[in-house]
Length: 194
Image 1 (cartoon, rainbow, N blue to C red):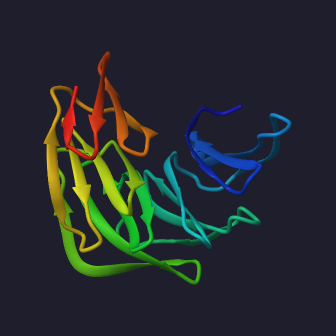
Image 2: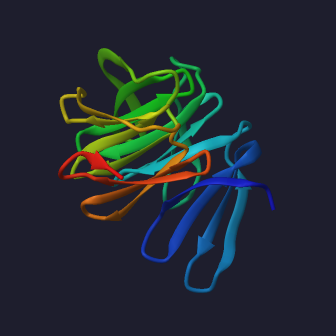
């Protein structure tokens, strides 16, 4: 099996895993068995996000929408051919982040991604991960945690004393950050970390 780098929930019992060389696997979580395996893209898929009607895959070549029922590629966004390192789907739009620290806002409509607005945000030197919390997008950008609101603005920036490699919500109000042999907990209500 190819190296899997990211995952997203398809439904109550299935998870889509994606990774090297554009391969995807569908895991049935009840049986623990892979029920589908095929090549979706020709480049490594670094990140996945799910809206109500599509899965968005971020790869070394850009963004691609995927039908969550057939797992067939619907459309590859060709305007921006860039290395996507993170993607998040909030109710107000899809945010992509690149290895060179650029954030872009998209709308996912009828299986296609459409660039929304003309603004890009510079997040720092790089974007490692993103996730949605209370309809804000949390962005791990270098050694900073950014909070992006529905106006596509950075409302808060929290400096961390290490490069953030990954993050996960521990509870509704607590985020765990990890990177370079370090771990931190962030109180999302107070905006402080330990």
